Image 1: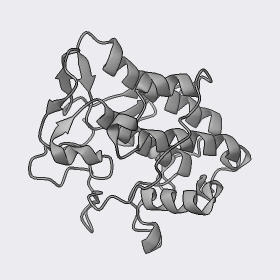
Image 2: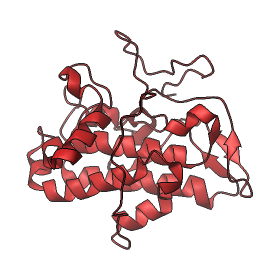
Image 3: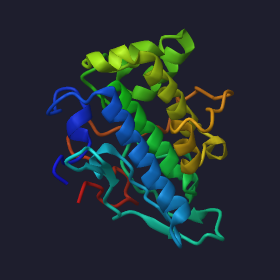
Image 4: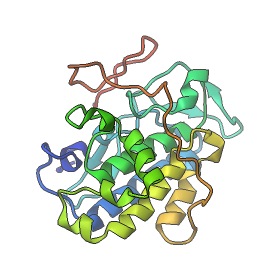
Length: 237
């Protein structure tokens, strides 16, 4: 995949060039379609369990492909949920992991985090920000409460600034995917329909994202891997 992984293109300071709104929107739709296929169209449901920008690869035309299935799990179509140990990358792990019972909605949660990163041009956890802004979800909740979601749009892209209103609408899709109650999150096929203009976003959303169990990387640790003893190393492969 000639353009490497998505993280190279969306984080300020490490990106090779700044992606325009149309390209980011297409990448987001590609990821959603890929996950919808894994969850609903395969013979067995595939839960990826490690959706993050490092595991989204881009070809020469910036078509996005979901990659790295090292932590993925097969689930029979007759199963509603499975039990498993916690895996994945801190910051992208859904709250219900702590019960060890998961559904495909853990991928929906991780997708919501990735969407926010794409729209805001920053990492989910960034110590280069002021302390109160280290975690992107806390910023998201605060901006929602204060009615300042427009302030979250990637300030390093003039094109993103021009399309602020559209970007904020996509932030609402991200919020739907990030509902702490996994039963309230949409399926990925529903997300695709919203992006394609066939359905509307759920209106009554919970913007309380301040879960004390939110994971953060250890100070000074620059690698992307799980910090929990029950997890496997999780870098792009």
